[in-house]
Image 1 (cartoon, helix red, strand yellow):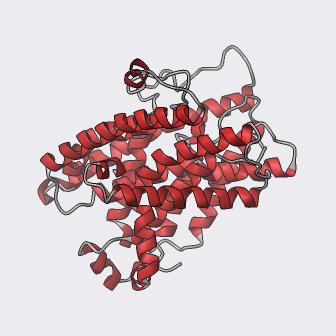
Image 2: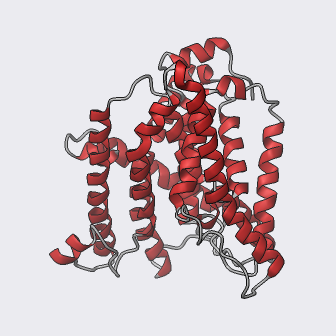
Length: 376
């Protein structure tokens, strides 16, 4: 790991592609795929066996997946040289239309693979509601992303305000992040601490329930803003001693591991950890560690740069397609059609293979005039 050089910073500021952000997106989508289809035969409740601890330790790290996506989005969107509201509205509309299209494609693909024929009413219904034949649980991410995209121009104007108003807007941004950290993030940690120290008692206060930001939105706004600001001031952030970052990551990991081991309730260690302080610590340190990679050297290796761009530029397509392919494979494993040993090593290879297949699908979609909009 190394600090960003002045020469490298100038090149990045002149709109050269930052492959480090693509690498972060690739890491994030790998964590997503591993989380959704970790075919190891080990579960979140397995706290006693060695492999169970290893598996759940991996899942703890995977909890940074969606936070990293929002941090990269913040880095890219909030640091654009200019903002076209017309183009941004068009992009939001295309994302919404692609979202509905992928719901239909997902429903038809999975039901067809299982020998189920959907009627016209079911196909129309699946655009807006869940249907019993298909698991749509992963689609929560897209409405959250769209919600953030709608209010993003306001944040862009704040961060890129004229110099005369920059100080007061900077103070407001600091206040907003601090407020959201307290009301949308720390409330989750307080609930976990109550559970650990008070146990299953009636007088526990559900702080998340009384928070006006008790949905995911508040927490992900924090990731979006922090990603944008850290990238904007990456030269200053690069002065942090590199060994401090792995130490901070280890602290975040240790706290979340303690939450998991100490909790008497069964909770999803990935999905339920997005808005917790230790996940923020791990996500921020990963983000800063990847910014230490020399972008110029990545750009010099043309083949590697193209591979990074191809995968990093198709993460939204991978997000949609991996669910379809993964579910079809999973159903075939469940009924014995496909036999895959429950092995951590094989599971990692399987996830990489699934990402490669989905990347190829994304690249092919981009070649087709109408369907290219499905690729995000």
